[in-house]
Image (cartoon, rainbow, N blue to C red; front, top):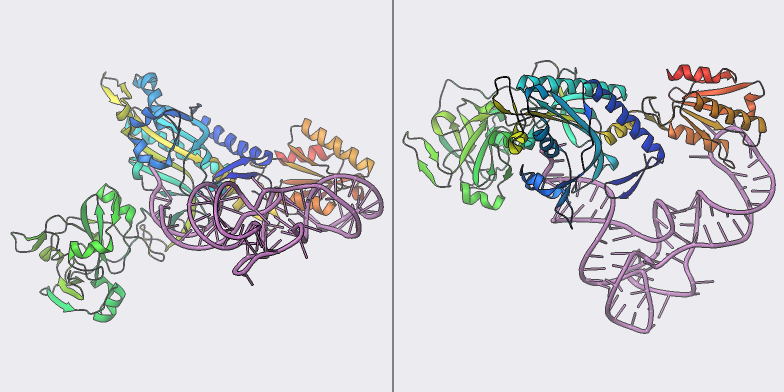
Length: 552
RNA sequence: CGGGGCGUAGCGCAGCCCGGCUAGCGCGCUUGGUUCGGGACCAAGAGGUCGCGGGUUCGAAUCCCGCCGCCCCGACCA
């Protein structure tokens, strides 16, 4: 984009859009606008400057923390999103179920103080976003608004010529009941997604699941025993040392959930998925510092297990070993297993033949593992691969979190006061453009789809000294412009033809019209299709009609 | 916030270790001429607080200290 003269970096994550880039952004925004209008959206323009107090209402000054820009000489912030403003408006404008449903949207600059802007325009501190908010009187109505948005988003990305897919996502700290992301596969993406080879499954790695065999339950339930395992630190080493399969081993990791230590048991060498852990526990988590591990468990990482944890461990009444203070949860693959091997909470010792039900108190079994490439999709069809992706759009069912905070309520048919049920939906406009370029380019430059192309036609005047050629080109420019065709006219003098051709390919308008004396002698003008490189020679009288037909 | 790199002409860079003449190179720019259908050539020019501040020194782009900015990796990311 920088090479094509579309944008220019002013500061980290802050870009100027030059005329060419600006035209493309406008095209993308117009497509978004049309599809939002088509589902009954009403366009707003909310202020980017918001009073801090507004954000205090929902506690999101703290939640956003350093990501939100604060104005120094007024108690104002630069809005990173607009749920608060929407709620504030809804509170005074929505009184009855008769006022609902509503879809309010805007296309506006958002400000986020990203700690690390990267990948050019993909993660900026200031960026253009279409954000919309649905207001509904029931959960069923929210589902409808949500589906309308999903439909509109599909139309938008399809019209922008993007190959995209939809994934289920973690609703995370937005506090919603459902969410979905629209992604484009790209190595420069920041999200990691899991895709089934047959296209039948796609999910963010944070929530992805797969079919993997559970650990076995043996009829022969052996008694607990301790084994000496000197210098064995990892699960792989342990499997090697004891000559057993990974599914007999349980890895233990310890996290802080606020101030409560949580021991998580994973089968074999499965990786814990922190996002899943976070949603299971409902609070932010962080790994326990290595130096604290001995104090908490009695052993270093590598010898930790669910039995006999040091932290104020007590004998439970039933005779098993329980702990106080520690919470122990396990991946659901371990549910009901016996004859399991895990750390003894004593350095260089492991316990064998653990029966999780008999020997310890597990507070719950949850899906906590990270999906790995090659596993089977949850629908049983196709093997999974893992890819990087760019998030183009995200749709959320918000529920009543924000309307509760603001007291944004309405009266239903029976005169009962209820909170408005909200949804929130976003699309990054820059990302549409960046992804389009990434998916539509070759070694010579950009290959615009006509939906987003800054201009439809690029006139390359080759023979700047030839009077007739200049005349023809200038008239063509005027005629096309009058005919409603967007034209870029390269009439630069003292620039060699080769230079102009290279520039035309780099900028990538769908059709190049090449005016030069070479073919003009026969009354012909050359049209080159950028995508295919195909050249056609058209009579100069017919060219406007021909191009208009291509545009349709 | 942690780790690494960089900051010298509009752009891209060399010079810095080992301090020393007028701070260079390529592209671009200006002027003149030739060229003119796939990134032309010749000639003559213009263009610099060497990121900022302090220090060492007879002398600092170069060495030392502090700060700022940018890039990359990580943490974080409604």
